[in-house]
Image (cartoon, rainbow, N blue to C red; front, side, top):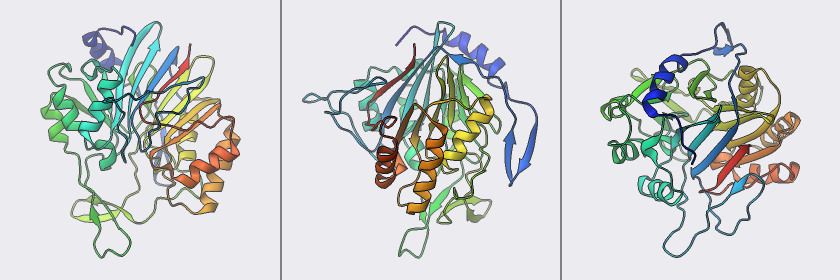
Length: 347
């Protein structure tokens, strides 16, 4: 990793830019939408997949990937969960953030150590949404690195990130309790929780999308996913789900999703709207199309294909059938993700 800005200097920067949100808003379909803002270009973007559902030690490298090669006693952990470590380089200065945390602390820390990443030097942390396979290791990883993390380092979340959630399982009379991340536990570790609704820069060149506008007809959240609001269990609309967007100089947008419960097409369209450009360089992350109906998969693939990304990297909860559809329909753009892979975009 390149030498970055001093962390205390970064925190001063964060106070000025973390609240740099796009002005003007309107309501559409009950979801907050935003107009275009100018986002800083990134000279270079590096993304490590700290955790994902799949690992393959023999998968070859490509133009944008460097994969970890296991040797006896040193193997990457794979799980049902997702976690990223991100480094941006803007005007020669490097900054880092961790986005999502997966679910197995020992496994994720194993991968972090094998990949040579120092979580203690992270300038910001972020959570896409409040499901256990994205937050469960957060307090453990932060606690293990607490002595090295600067007090007051921001922990960015969207609306309802700390609400308890449930899932209705087949042939089960009662919803399964998916737990909840506790805001008090994050704050007790010395981090500053920052809730956002608007597009927000969390480190130089890395932006939360803000609340994602729903514009497609087919990307609907299934009624089996519930959230506790007050004393009631209600259908979860994932109103506060966040994705990351970057504008890589000379390349275009890189969009990173957690699960894309709001829809991966909606998510990319939100990123395009925020950045004020249609040029998409890469789309990666969970697309939440596991067990989706064929027509929904086909519509998603067709709409993503029409966006003409240079790279498509489905991961985590995308689902086998959807991954195969992208591989078949977009063979030149498709990259099979494996846990422990490092992606590099830009110079």
